[in-house]
Picture 1 (spheres, rainbow, N blue to C red):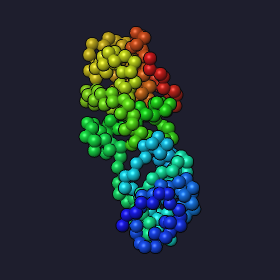
Picture 2: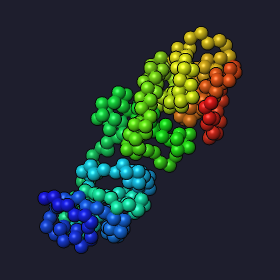
Picture 3: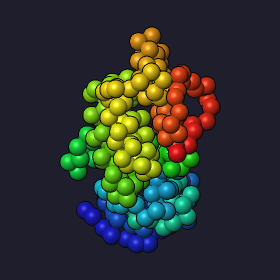
Picture 4: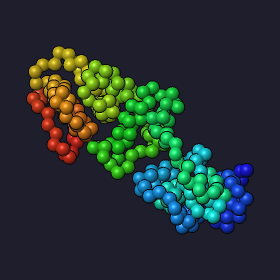
Amino acid sequence: MTHALAPATLTDLDALGHHGPTALVITITPHLATELLKRNTRNRSLRDRAVGDYARDMTAGNWVINGEAIKLATNGDVLDGQHRLHAIVKANLSTDMFVVIGLDPETQETMDSGRKRSTGDALSLRSEENALSLAAITRRVWAWQQGDRRFKGRYTPTTAEVLTLLAKHPEIRRSTEIAARTRSSFPHIPQSVVGTAHFLFNAIDPGECAWFFQRLADGAELPLGHPILALRTRVTSERRDGDRMAEDRYLSYLVRTWNAVRDGRELARLTHKPGSDIPTPK
């Protein structure tokens, strides 16, 4: 049985909950979310990242009713949905939610047992080519734009934020295609880093960017001392030695090489101290 109730109060929910499992779409105000959280007595540890992700989507207007429900027990306890409720409080916005009330408290043991759909899955459903790589590259472009140049920030973008950024910058698809093509010829730099660098460099000079990644892939006719030759030699040697390199190190190498090419400088050797800043492409 499905009801629509907006706005709702605890009294309304408790009254309906006595009739067994009931589904509703209601507007949950920050006040109601706060009251419901007082009944959040038996749940998993709160994950601040998830709360922040949801709150950003709500603030940006990206929150949609997708069938995932706040679940309440017959006694009113919150069985599932604490992160969404905390996000409503954090965003301080009334939000429409699908709610199921009147559940047996023991059903909590079977909740959230399925595999979470990833951003890559969402892009696959949209028939995007190279969906997993596209998701990875778009996430890193998002991080760069947030000032996280090392991809180690506290927050990662939500699926809605990835889709919004991709709609704003459809050229990320081309960067993903170039990354896949480059990696098929020169597999020593992660595809996600190659695609992110391509997006950044292409925004500066599309023509030189195209030449840069073609030479990165094939190494053709590069004289001794050329920055791209130094890059290819460096990462090939490190991969051969079995070194495990962080993504920010690869990105630093790419940016330093790009800047040297743009300046017309030779580059005999590439270095990057762990934890140091990533230079700005120019």
